Length: 369
Image (cartoon, rainbow, N blue to C red; front, side):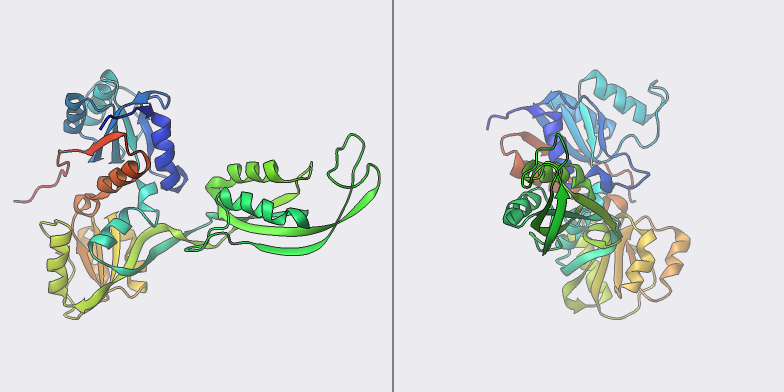
């Protein structure tokens, strides 16, 4: 198959439509780390970590962009002298005209992201976000002539508004009477200059994700018949069912802790499980968090989960299980190793003729003897 090139921003804009950068944690550094968004790329190499070996693989095989889960640059770089692996990677990438892009906690926090991958590997059902984010949803209210109601709603829905969980095209409308007086130099859609006009109007309300606000307002103004579009926006405290940390679900059938551990190691290619004391009971409800998940332990316990699958628990944090849950720490790499396969599937679906593949390098820095 012939590979067709594209601008970097075409690829990254698509990835950010799936996992918006606004969803990343404050400490994170997702996005385009090296490269010009207007440069043309021919093929992408996908990985969990952008190591020196991965960059060498990209050079040897003609890849001009590396898409990694973990950002190679977390803190500010004041000098590029090659004194550590981060500087060496950045220098080598720049010298060889290779862009580096990271899609990290923004991918962790979407319902269809890292935790969904784990849930599918473990065959969990009835899944939902373990710790939903709040403050990401807003409400737009506008007013328009009754006859324009459906036209305006269609434009708002097409722009991404009105999505609630598994439902789309959600809105609320109520009819009433609006008044206005067109002043000199106005060009009113209805009514006359200098006279108060009464119009049968409809108030339209839709909720939307905050990151689409600018495009939503643009769509509203483009379709609305009035010269001056009346609308207002409210921030909502609602929790999002599509964005947040961790995930919880159920196994199809209850099994013993040992049976689950055996299944867990097999499905997640885990060499070892560090765990809190077993409780010698059947398990069915499973909480998961890709990467470092100890901050979600209290949420996992409160959810009634029998086991919490995650990584990077410290010694003393295992005591916090307090015989209420079994902590199963399978390793950071192990919980996220399938992430770049997810990225590959999304790219293939959107850009079927763009060449890409997953790295052949095992980037896990942790080894077991």
